[in-house]
Length: 121
Length: 110
Image (tube, rainbow over all chains, first blue to last red; front, top):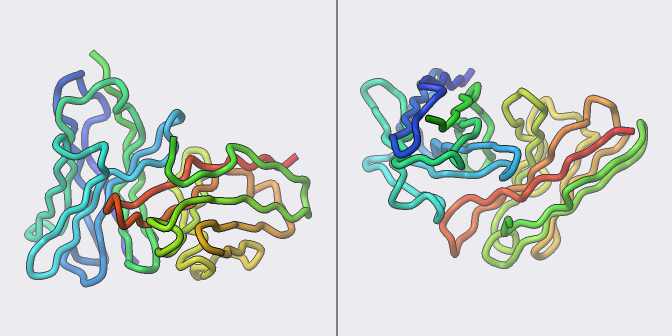
């Protein structure tokens, strides 16, 4: 059974970097045809896809147009986890953040427990 | 404003059939699979439908999906109170090179 366990701070100050980690069990970050995603949810925006990484011999990355240049996703094969880093956050980045497995083309079938992140001074 | 358009709300009484729509374009729904997710308050979203009309194991057959051209629909038969949730469609967009979610439909069971 695949499980995703998220960790990271729930409060981040404006202009700082938001960093979250997602530990994978029951699967590997190098799985074929699997992409590891970050998605956030807020009352004003609903579900919003942020980006993903998928790795074979190399790792590839796709990001939402609105996120490019301020977001990185880093897979860590030694720890079997992946992380999200979002630079220069503003209060609009306040949301519940989820890490998600996408077993392509079978959909986003495994979700982390969610981390509520508040951007406030 | 989402590229995938969903009505903001829908409602029905227990036992009824409810449908909700998702409208996109040839960049997304027209040439890629559609997925549906159920989001209950305080929980992580749950995959309901994949590849337009397929149900994952454990999803009741009361839920069904369909796709035609650049639009898709989710139908719920035999509506139950526990179906009250937000429902999101999703599809890959080949022009934006990213996954898109619709704005979500809030289903109320009266």
